[in-house]
View: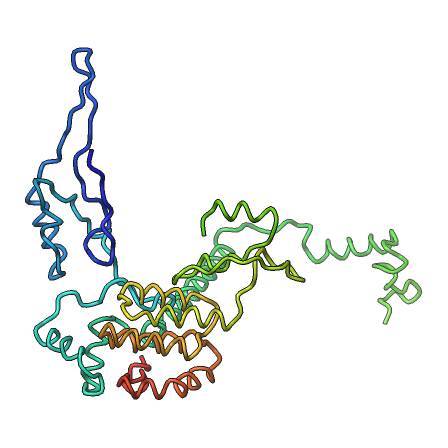
Length: 213
Length: 148
């Protein structure tokens, strides 16, 4: 039985998965247990698709298609991704995967002394590896203004709706809220001496029939 | 340092376990006396030991790109701004790997790491100036990419 070997990540950038090989299958045939080796068929289409997906990355073909065994289809989302984040300053891959000839020659020049590079060349090298600089990624958008504007707009619309409702939807208030009724309520409360010590009636001057100053 | 020896010793004597995380060769075992104040088990690593560990990590002559990235991303994850000597070792590692972009990115990252303490980054650049001149690394300010 052959073992699946996890190929170390740094050397083979394409592979985060196993090299699939033979899997032993136990099959009951006519009451007798018989070990059968089942081998995965090459799907040459998948292998070439995988190679195409990865573009110009150096791929040792001997690993990916070897001895009649293929590679499981490499999904895009399973590959290392580039992202700009403050807490991950050096992402797993360069931003630009396929270098143009000028960029390739620039990369060659990078192997020499860096003092011989002009500022533009240094910026170009930076932009090959990274998408946004820290300043650009931290900048923030003006989106909050649209958000606040939207909030205020909808609060205003709600205000209009409320006013319309008050005029056209709601009926009259109960008669117990009319001014005369309220005066009678007040007189009754004073007659009952509600809270005469510190509260309501304590503030009414019964001699002079007015509120205490 | 195998698990078996750890178990054997723990019954009798406290052991330093700070070497387990080390990315270089493992620390020699020794019996440490119980600390007067026990924060957690084992000895606390001093700042100098921390710095030395990271300097030796980046100073590996055949460091590869993955290790540089891993080291840098881990270092930025800590709640500190790395010492200039650690950054110098990291920049030299970038030089060995012929990666100028990463060198500039490292400078940006430590400036971002300093946060509101605006005086840290100029100090770092001042300390790193000889290395920057020697290797020909421009700072983000000199290249104009520090402004969005």
